[in-house]
Image (tube, rainbow, N blue to C red; front, side):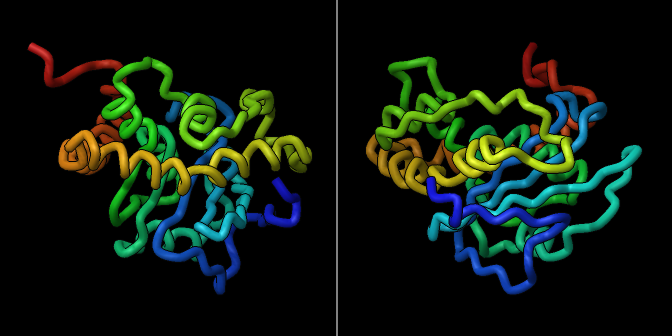
Length: 210
């Protein structure tokens, strides 16, 4: 990945940022528990493969500066938002930035629906099989709250979104081929309810069970 394709901003993206009709989104946090750990970084990328890394400043549980431009983008009903494991990232964004609007696509859910020949549905596995790219996850557990991100962190964060459009194209084809587009769409629509359950204390309970 070229370093010139990665731009780091504090608190928000510039007002004139053009990303197109589909954006890939990811987040980095201090941990995986919503009511304990805070948001540190939001990564977004359009089909032009330019990555924007937005550092989020949260102190004592308070968002210090509202990312108004990013918030408008997340609420744009015309823009498709692509995630890998959307359940977590949407919950994080809802918790700190605000609710999303518009269509959602989750590469992890799509993978589970069409790649039934394997139980490996991580981003690294998808990139290797579907687009022939080897990802390093070395920086996954690094300190994302530090004031200045390392070059390795920037590259890692960008790689979490830079390939999602290519995976989206591959998975859309596979969903159509296996006649599973409708069930995938219903799963993506159900993410709003799943996230609400996660944020309100039912993350480990299947409320649909007997």
